[in-house]
Image 1 (cartoon, rainbow, N blue to C red):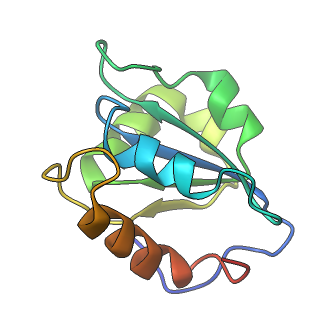
Image 2: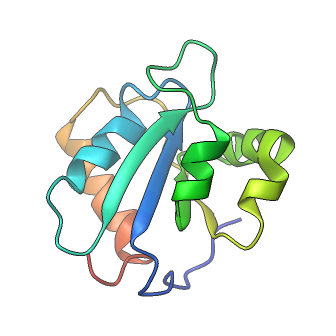
Length: 119
């Protein structure tokens, strides 16, 4: 369940997760390309994902954003140890926006501003 608490300012490596890593999480990753304060990566939970999430992704990340609650559930089922002590935030963004859709970008910016003070 998301909270409105910003992640710690020293959390600079952020990971975005959706199902296929083709639209939502990849768009979120691209939002941070060349960002001065955050480094972002993205992955998907499903077997056919463009990049499938691994323990290595979760080990690298200091904060994890998922698009839907079910993505958080899948991560907890498979990677409970790797998630220990890391913020896991559900953005509640449905799978209805294509890659780089302006509505998706606006929604991501709106939802992320709550958590990323240096956005």
